[in-house]
Image (cartoon, helix red, strand yellow):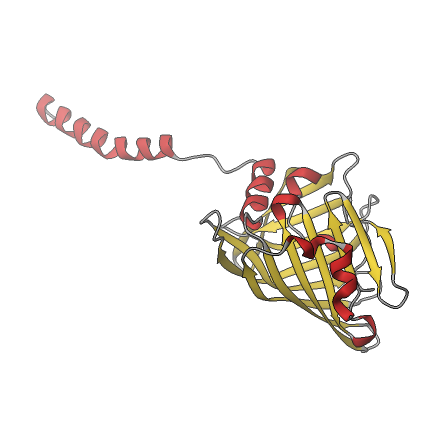
Length: 261
């Protein structure tokens, strides 16, 4: 090859290589595990007040079924949360109220309030308060990568979460499966020994626009929860979601007590 042809060939090779090099230089590394927790919390938290209906179908191992309905109210900016039970009839009017870091359960049969925790089961099901409240993954857990699992040809990034010291959580250990958009598609909660306590499959999300922030937020639409030991499962549907200002009086014991008056 003559010198002029050699120079032309090198120039052409360099011209083809430079865009690829530039693309590699511009490519951002994937988010770290702790960055992913903050991202998930942000996209599922609300600047607006929240009102919605939760409908639960519980199926026990012996085949017995029951239906539960609850109205949920959230004010994430103040960490306030209220849940009013509307079905079954014998529990209707009871519920749960959290103001800041304090969570109470109200029994309509006794008219009494009892202090409870985020670990406690809701309405005697395998669900917990944290299933319906704003997510606090970054506040409560530290995370590390747990590899990639391919299911039916689709890769999912896995994270292993360990509860921070003093954090009040439903599961001391938690494993998450994330899709390509970093949405949780599966989560498994474990005891400190590593024993599986509950497996959740997120069947679908609903994308909403927060009227206060103007940003899109992601909210569960349907989740399947399976309790490992006794085989009970529940299907949780999040319906009739409204993002709009709520009366401050809703987040009080007096408001909940007055629902049956």
